[in-house]
Image (cartoon, rainbow, N blue to C red; front, side):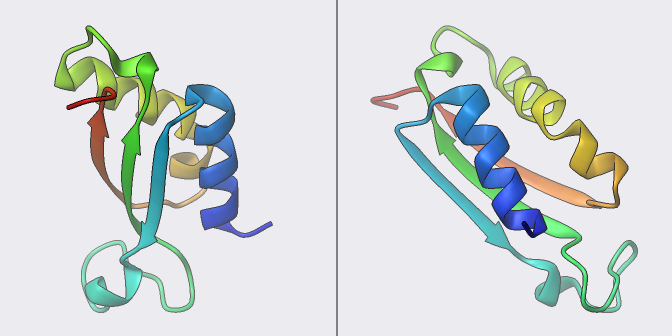
Amino acid sequence: MNTLDRIRSTLAQGLAPERLEVIDESGSHAGHTGAVPGKTTHVRVRVASAAFSGKSRIERHRLVNDLLAPEIAAGLHALAIEARAPGE
């Protein structure tokens, strides 16, 4: 399973999202700090989940970051998060 698949699976299991997009933006960051040719290092996550209801933006980001901590430890350099509750 590749990095994007692991991220999708982890977020699907941890958040039961209504909507989930995981986008590899690594190619757009070639030559930047943290970019490694051939490796997924920069990812954008767009997720809508009831788990975010009543939570602040920071709390939502912390939840996603906590779920993806193993990926970050394994070399995911940048994670852009767009987290919303249903209906937002």
